[in-house]
Image 1 (cartoon, rainbow, N blue to C red):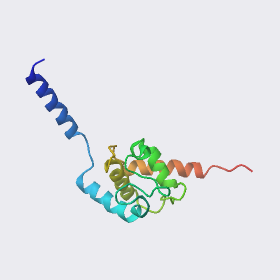
Image 2: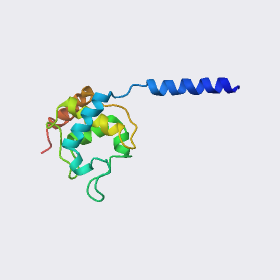
Image 3: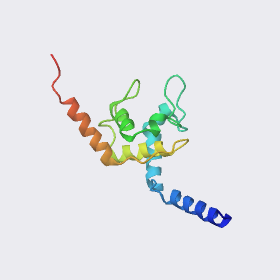
Length: 133
């Protein structure tokens, strides 16, 4: 293989990476603002959390894992984290989660308001099931 072919291959790879769908600057800004308002007291603006109290989001397997796992956790809350099921509009929550998944050491896909609504609906259906005696 010639140097020219390798160079063209690397150029094509770089173009593919750069053209991959990514959150817009506006979405990331809205997410950063929402994160600062709703999440940073515990998880810190750096995403590093507070050791022993609030987990780091930077480099987090949950933050970078499947969207539905992170969305469910945020909607339902866990440990000292409150439920955000009715507290934040879907678009705002999607912006915040997209920001978290694409900031610091994280490199994960965006979250859409439709994904949030779908998981809210699924959680609501589970909540409405009759409880055992």
